[in-house]
Amino acid sequence: MALWTLFGLKRGKATTPWPGTETGDGQDGLLGMPRYHPELCRADCSACADACPTQAITMRPEDERHNGDGMLAVDYGRCIVCQLCTEACPTGAMAPSSDWAFGVARREDLVWSRDSDPLPEIPERPGFRRSLHIRHVDAGSCNGCESELQALNNPFYNMHRLGIFFTPSPRFADLLLVTGPVTNAMLEPLLATYEAMPEPRWVMATGTCAVSGGIAEGGYASGHGLEGILPVDLWLPGCPPNPAALIEAFLMFLNRKAQRVTGGRMRHGD
Image 1 (cartoon, rainbow, N blue to C red):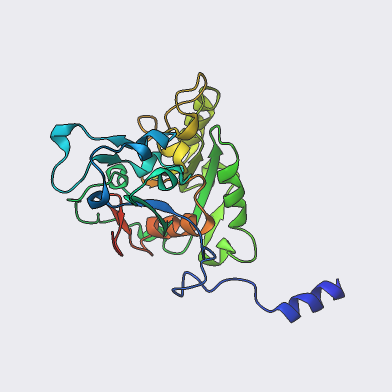
Image 2: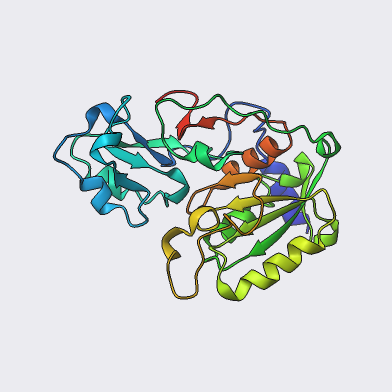
């Protein structure tokens, strides 16, 4: 024990000061959602759409190619961040980026649009300014999201310092966090967990599988995510979303961070 105490004193504080500071989120060099640059699209090219394994990128019909939206329909709610589109695109219309903070309150804000609506007003939840208790349900995940959720409790992120906690019982939970595409086997347990939560209760779709079905969508035992099953208050795509993206989404839910994405685009630029 004395050796570990000495080691800890020598290393100093391990917990990041983020999100209280602009830096230190632990995501330096991370590849995030690909950015779409419609002005670079080539009329005879469908390389990125052909490469996309989840149909996050599809070709627009001829009569819908207007207002500078280009040839592609891009739905980040279906994106698994595999980067295949950026590798296949010959012109840079789909380009790598570090845009990882993609939590939104409206599902439509994950769909790329040149003429996007203003950022939504997140409902005030004054009772949750100090703490938030989360019940997690794995509804058929590959466990990629779970590995990122576990990292929230490590010394670097130390989610408890923000007043955010996981609870084993739905009866003490404010927010139901769901991962996975909602397989047939997990549908009934998921609904039972939701019904056991006290009102008011909220739902967060975590990871592309929970948002839209992800890579497993359309399988014999897989669903299409939470849409149409539970009322979703927070959508966070990614495969998986990283710990910083999870924390930012929680703080957005608590009105302690502003939503940064509208019309499939980060506010800091195209």
